[in-house]
Length: 248
Length: 353
Image (cartoon, rainbow over all chains, first blue to last red; front, side, top):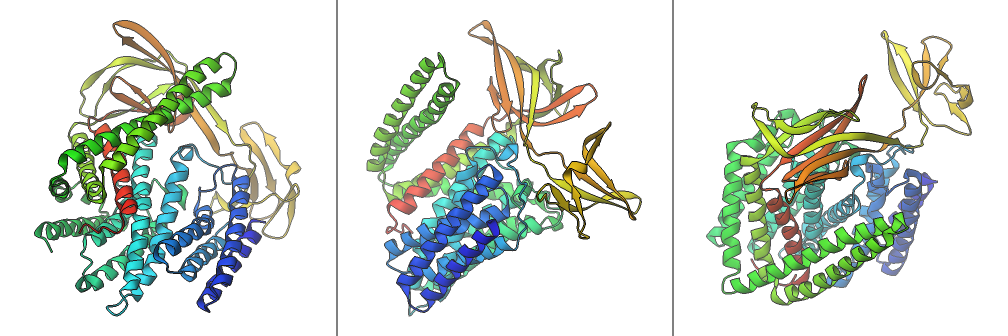
């Protein structure tokens, strides 16, 4: 059932990305809605299976991506009048593809440290922030002196995502203060999350003048690399001794 | 580009490089974070943030102060809603005469909501993009101040107590051998552990002189499919003295063993008694400490860290912590979240660079 729902959602998101790529924006949007509904059903199925909010492992989190990316796409369309359905649907499809390649972990149960009111908002905000920042990379890389509009779109997405990233980082610290007795432990995941956040802060400190376009593009790309390391690579580093091992 | 921005960028860049250097455990560099270089960078960053906040609020500092006070009251209202509202729900769930208390808590929660709405409105009127940005910089200063205060004056001691014993904790001994008397006495009356009602199975194989995990088995219609194509009925698993869970030894070479796994822990909590003085009179409190719910008493925070089953009973691992900068740092974190959110979302068209 879980695999089937993941597959259906993945196919719909892929079809949406393809349709948007071919210029059929209405069909793309409808397909994305379908993918979102399938992802919602998947979320419910995961919750029933886990008997808790299904954010406990990497597969759960990856399955959650499409749920937040559709509202984010709608917001960006509303705010920038730029239709980025291709990017958002493709990002959702990549996340679902990752989820499909991971073991089901049907017996996963929420451990005591995760039973906190911070759990859901912390994970949701990070998923939103990382999803949005990843999408912002595409228009940023397409930006040039001839088409500065792409950079403005990327800038709008970064500004939408930064509060979520800030909330994710510092709500994690507030949670850690209650659960581990310290708000900052220099854990490997925390360190990379801080580094990622700092890269986007550097980006926001740069002037918007055309002369700084290349630097700003590079920083958004570096931020994307940092996101990939924080979200995925850190989990596979040997002997990391991370306090975040449950997020693998 | 202004010189202050250049310096800020240099410091942030240096912090990024240091974090990168320590970000790979293979390089064994986590100590980088506690090094003098990082401490100095943190200090410089805090100073720059203070200056940036001061400059950003130029000409409107009183307005910023008023706005931040309103933000504080709005947050206090929200905290009241959170604290008393959740307690009201908890008491209402217990039923019976608790309803009266629940009603009182709910009223306090509603007052908190009014506080949040009123002061939130004033804060929104007083502040604008640049002032929110100034607030975000000062919030970072608060975090740094709290962190440095903790670095200099934090006390943290791990203790282990047997649940249900007459053991009492009234002073702690730090790593350097200093005895610090607590203004209260703590004892652990009871320890409760609950596990999930789930069943999972693991196949072990006897190789190289020891049992090794071969794979996890998923139950299907009351049977466990084996990797070699065979099937074993779950009902065939047996219990035996000394074995905490059902198991089955399979015939053949190498020897194979199916064992039911220990179900994961759902929750554990320590029911503690705290004896202290309240306004000169002795007071005894029964408190439950859980993983995410530490106990605060007389400037100390007591955390439930772990437990161990021993021959003499369950040992409960607690951590006692007194951190002078904790509240400052936590307030800074909340302020940073709020100010960044309002700066990014309320006035996204004002770059303020």
